Length: 258
Length: 216
Image (cartoon, rainbow over all chains, first blue to last red):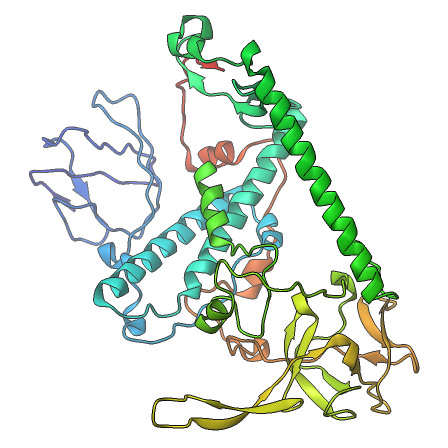
């Protein structure tokens, strides 16, 4: 069912692996719309029950770029909770995903889950902001914490897998290169590299940075070292005095000496 | 990365090293009144008990060994690890008025005082007498509390969760993943990164290559 209309229209046909042409310019009169549901929205992305991936065919002369979206069944209403939960004081929610459970999932599953969690987080943040605007309590704020934890654990699992692969294939321990460098104050720190378009010898701003300590900083270094040693001694002395008092008060139980 | 680290630091509660923990939770007004930022009080020495050797939990039935209510058994309602305190239900009480106002003298209630771990003893389930308890491993490898005198295992108390959920009666909501789906193993180890695998599955072809860049 084709509908011709002015404005942006899209082509979708997954089974035959056709192209999706999204013209970057707004004046699109070339493509036609084929929708399975029979509705046409000339100015909005259609919501279909078909696949979520379109691929761009570079053979076409039209300027195009690939777009991959999830199916949006309710449109903008996905930013809010389902209508059954409107007005409730508490909304039931299950336990967050644990890292152990996430490690058994394939990369594709994790990829899909990430976007599911992201959309849920957006929904909860919208609810939170709306309840702030209306001056009311958000129903079940612990859902946000659960989602945050799930997202963090997913990220951890993905990083673990990436780390393992990188260690195996290259032996590099870190994803981002860096180096131990001394700053102007004599402190040694881990300097994380940044990506540049020019080599370092052509980068004027980089050449102005000083990764060494000038000679006149030496007295300051001595004083700082003295301060550090004094603080360390003070702390050790306090700790030993503490231990002595604890030993005196609780003579029998001294298992954890900390 | 530094921003997230900073935010997580702010999210975690930071106490001064000489903070005196009381029965009130630290974020309540009463606790803030008792511990204003600049106050200095005499230091309380708490017997250091390692984390793994802690044997008293919320919901346990324990007996009081010394004090006003010596010999009585009660259920533990609150445990304060940083001061080795335990609050029992309705025992070791003193009386006070709460909700006092200008004209009204307030409600006279009994409030429990905390008991130190030294004055508490766990109860053997067979003869219901106080015993010493040790942590030992069962044949399955589970860590359990065992009474030294009789050798009987002291079971961990069943306490209702704070959010009121009973795991046996839980029904999944529309957004919850079912247990079978959660435990289903779909991971196939391969030498591909997540990005490469996903690109393969979605049929994305990226023939462009990165321009040469310099890292320093």
